[in-house]
Amino acid sequence: MGFAYAKWMKPHTIINGGVTSVAMIGNKALGIPILYLTNGITLLLLVICWFFLGRQNFFRSILSSICYNLFFSVFYLAPFSARINFPIDFILASILIAIGYYCCITANASTVGMDVLALVAHKKNNRINIAHAIRWINFSVLLLGFFVYGWQSVLVGVLFSFLNSWLLSKLLNRESDRKQLEEQND
Image (tube, rainbow, N blue to C red):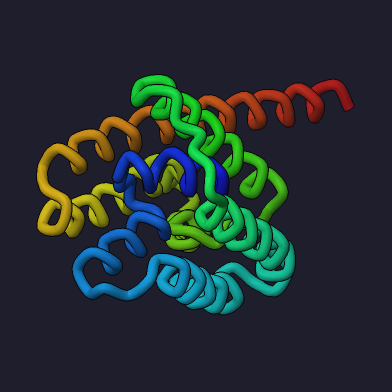
């Protein structure tokens, strides 16, 4: 996820509603460095994770938050480009980010991104679909991004959010089906 955000999302100014998108908006609007904002927002979400998702989720999420922030920072500062072309970069970023969310969620952890808010909502009401909640949180951030980046970046972000949340939903449904099959075989 850190690589995808640092080398594809940020260079293409794709704001999809995640922590990095909030940091990009804050950077452009306020001039605060992206790395400070990304790490600060992640720390705030980690505190929310502790209070609302519990100690177990918090401790599992620490590793993912450290990994994301470390990899994002390293790849963001690395002096090379991984861009191929926009459509391929868009698809690769969607896949890597969906897989990252999937790995964290199925480990009962969080990426300590905006998924924390979706997981809190799901915990309060288990009928709330996590992938859909992430999508709507992303759309809220995109609305803010409209005022800073304009409609083109927001349109790409909306498309990204749909593809990313669709991929995540497919992965989570597949995991749910696998667990149900295991329970039936036991």
